Image (cartoon, rainbow, N blue to C red; front, side, top):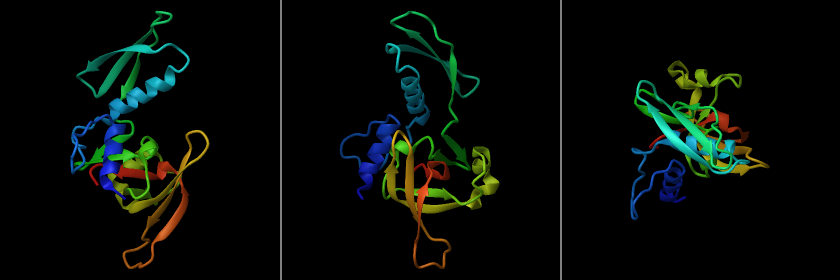
Length: 183
């Protein structure tokens, strides 16, 4: 699969434009939290007229308060803080993107990490550095988009380093997937 098209889709999803003829991904300037903030705004305001956002940055914490005023009714909605740590996190200098948040950019052939630990594990437990050994490198073999926004995946991986044949696991939820930024 052409990796440049994959990188272009990821960069487009997070709002980064890459110049024509670029040979490498441009993840360094990506701001996935801005993409998420824009997506949540679109879902919140489907029935109302298009909102006019005013962004206020809080320099003491990694949050942004966004205040919306509807152009149709001119009433102010409650200020909702956007958590910049939702959907991505960093461990020892590596940035990880959670599959539940970035499921829309998943496509066949992408290298991922697959959670092999407990199905009852919380997101905090999955992010914990002590549970790093529960993540296994894998490849997305197929992405299946079901009715609505539901997505499931076929994932291919080696159960052990001595295996010659890959294991194909079907119906994998995006909650068991994370992307490694720059891989």
